[in-house]
Image (cartoon, rainbow, N blue to C red; front, side, top):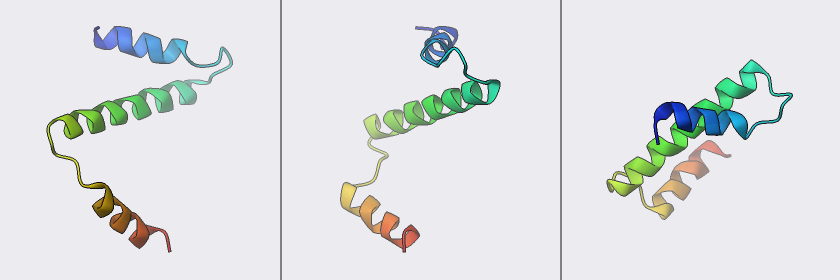
Length: 60
């Protein structure tokens, strides 16, 4: 699947009333998830417990 195909799938999944900001946000979120999944497959992720510890620092 090409990048253009992926972008079209993301855009087509949005409401017909989606704004350009909605489209940009959806494409951005999709790209970030893809990046994260790629890092996990490459063993670059962090352990679940480490993530929980980091999150606790942010949410006080």
